[in-house]
Length: 115
Image (cartoon, rainbow, N blue to C red; front, side, top):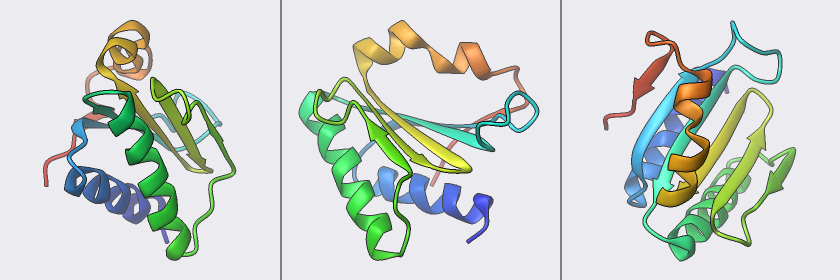
């Protein structure tokens, strides 16, 4: 599956599970770490944890395993690394604090996901 297809599949899944404010950041020109970040929010730590766990399970069934995961248990900021696509799922407070859109965005490389 190409990066674009994987990105769209992840965003669609997160949207179907009621993730909020889903943003795609194309970071190919900014880092060799990955091609894009997907940034989304959950309303509380339980939803953040559930979104991360459900996404990991959903992609695992499709044959995609994360290279690593971080922070899922705490439910404040979960990170799932799928090589070219890194997914960040925040609670509102953590998302405001880290504000990845500001760090990695320069207008044209950010896109709000609309299903």
